[in-house]
Length: 119
Image 1 (cartoon, rainbow, N blue to C red):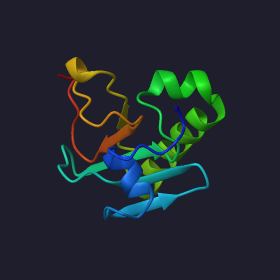
Image 2: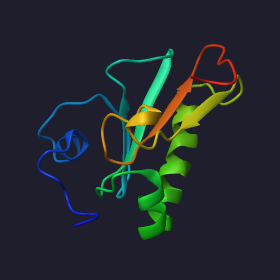
Image 3: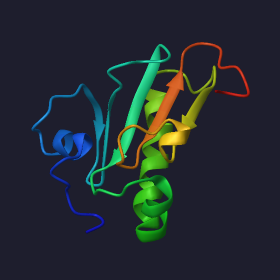
C-alpha cells in the first residue's frame, strides 16, 4: 500500500534505523542523508519518510509532503553552503532515468560546476 513501509526498500530501512546513514537533516515527514556514492562534493538525498515509488506518485498522493521534500532540499543547500554558488535538485523516475531505489527521493548536488544538459 502506498505510503506504508516496504520490507524490501533500502530507504524504508534507513527511515526505520535498520540501515545506517549519515543523516544531515530530519523533520516529521522527511529525512536527508549523504549519498554513499557521491557525484559532487555535496550530494545529499532528501526522502519522504512515507514510501512512494517516485516523485509523481508522492506528489499525487501527498502534495504537502512533496513540498516538504523540496523545502528540505533547499535547506540542505543552505546548510551545505552551496545556495549561492548553485545547486541542482534531481528526481530520477524509472530505471531508464537512473532510478535505482524505488522510493521517492531528491538528489541535492552542488559544490562543483554542473554542466547542462546532464546525462
